[in-house]
Length: 84
Image (tube, rainbow, N blue to C red; front, top):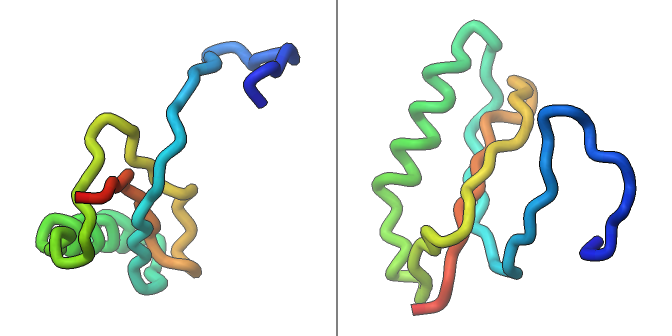
C-alpha cells in the first residue's frame, strides 16, 4: 500500500507506479531445457501482435514484467496498454 512502512529487503526499493492496464501473453508449457526457445516464441507473438485492432496501444511509460519461469504453466509476460 501507499503508506507501507515495513522493512524492505536489501537490494530492493519501493517505487510508486501509476494505475494502468496490462495485456498478458502466455505460451504453452515447456521443458525447462527449452526455456530460451519458450521465451522467444512468446516474444515473437508480442512483436507481431496487432494491438491497434483492439482499440489499445502499448503504454511504454509503465514497466513490462514476467512471471517467475515455470515450465508447467508456460512462459508469461505482461505489457502495459492504454486506449487509443
